Length: 234
Ligand SMILES: [Mg+2]
Image 1 (cartoon, helix red, strand yellow):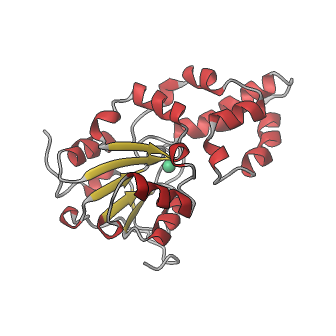
Image 2 (tube, rainbow, N blue to C red):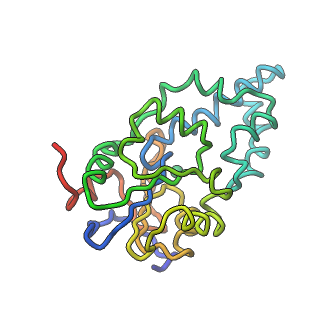
């Protein structure tokens, strides 16, 4: 796959018979990233600023470089790290904002149909285990996965080769017969370098933001575009 090519059109179809394993990201892929963007972009700066007499805009401006220096690292996804760094009880704040946790369109149906298929369905998320637990409590995620793993358990984020090496220790899979769906193109590049053959990204991870017209990897808007060939569940 040429990484420089832009795919402005959707994936035509997935030949599920050529696959044994489906690896799925959670936030921005199965769930609406609006929750996370709102939480980290507005709710946390609000709480942080309140303790320091700053309004939300001043807090956002002050915190932007603090967040930026951790991007792509395990700390970025770590509630404990941010709790210490910002002196906030993040899980408690998060527990009051669970209303925004919701499926992306047709994601639940996609999971149900994958679950009814021959495929090994594995969640791989950079989300902190506490966040995963909170989301799995709000939405019935767990029942459709054969395995759920966080990068915290594996000791490295999906952006790094160490993650993929650790993943193979936890779950055997043939990368040439594996599909990985993730809204982060950095993460998909990492999977591509590891050798995962089938990669798909999302055109609108956050329902409140614009649809991405150009992506480095084949992209779908919603999961109905790749449902064909999976067992029906209705
Ligand atoms: Mg994601």
